[in-house]
Image (cartoon, rainbow, N blue to C red; front, side, top):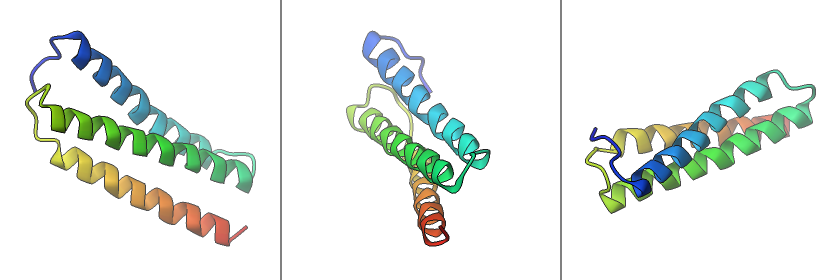
Amino acid sequence: MKRFQNQKNTTIAKQLLRSATSMGANINEAVYGNSKADFISKLHISLKETGESIYWLTLLKRTNLIEYDFEDLLALAEEIKRMLIASLNTAKRNK
């Protein structure tokens, strides 16, 4: 992957890093939550962060600011999104 060489690239990279790491951090917090409601709340936050990560990846792909094949990362993010939705649905059913 080419290095981020300008301010636009750096800003988008920082936003992607923030949303992607927040996704994992909130999943971790959900696992150690104090209650079922806390678990569900943290998974919802993680789902939002996943959506934001997909947005930033899509933006990078469409703008061609850097040369990289984003398909694998987008597919992984979509898979994580589906797993979070399934987990949320299960958690809500088992309240």
